[in-house]
Image (tube, rainbow, N blue to C red):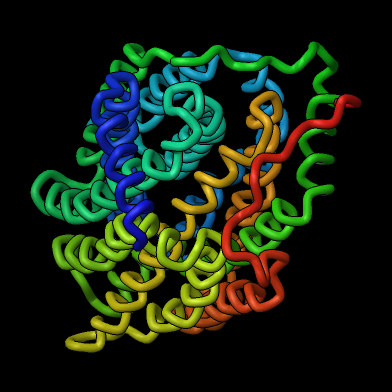
Length: 425
């Protein structure tokens, strides 16, 4: 890293440390992610252990968490652009707390059913659509533009750290208390996040788009992404990559429990060690950007994140589980580091009045492929086997990563600067 880059990073770090609203946003996000990380283990475990679910049911459960991006994703972006982002996030947190908290209550009353579990996943998925969209709108109102990359690195670094702690904690709680009762932590985390967000204050007033019918505002967001070659490329590659990653991720718990033969505690350890890659990725993202340039670093991370996904499905009993751990670690490193750089760039590049709609248009494709992937993985897992399906889905992810060789960023050192809206908009 050059001296200038290092000095700039240090200055940004000091400024962020003094920003009380950013610290509250940081804390709220981190606590909520910790709860979500435990849920990523506990919800499938509830289905497998309490309801004796197989591959198809686990796939349906995963699909339910992502289906809302297809159903309400585009309208959510148009609404969030017209609403106070902080309030949207608070309401989303509280609704998610109620949805997840209902599962341990139903279990205690011996009334838990598969429709209830899927309904809770759907409700949590809807709140995630609004929370993530509003978060992308709120962060530039809390953190000045030059500090966005450092802020994203800290937020994603904390997210990765919580994802490291969460699976292990979920495994321990499942072993000691039962999988359903462990979901209490997630419900509480959403409440804590809401309290932190309540105390966040913005440093700049958001630009509101002019009043227009909902369909017109949705069309503006879609047209902006479709007409921009950089955003369009990231959306297509992200959609294909997420299809593959979600496909093998939907079967990961079932694979480790039924095929590899791990118990809840060992499952938590494996996923915790694997998740450490994301923590390292968030740590080195800004360093890589300074050394190589943001565009070159982004392309390198996309290309390098493909082949390790194939290792995940090669794991087995005994020492062979190391293949799965290594694959999870390396994929997490590349994906999280790339997300840091792309997230900071998008928040600088996209005009603020369109931010919510651009985010949801992108996520409509990126996350919209996830329920389809989960359903396909569940069906294929029953037909051809869990391991074979995971390897097939990993190959899909690899194909997406290879597209970095034909990226519109080829030949560029750094990502393009902010795009200005034309007067017609």
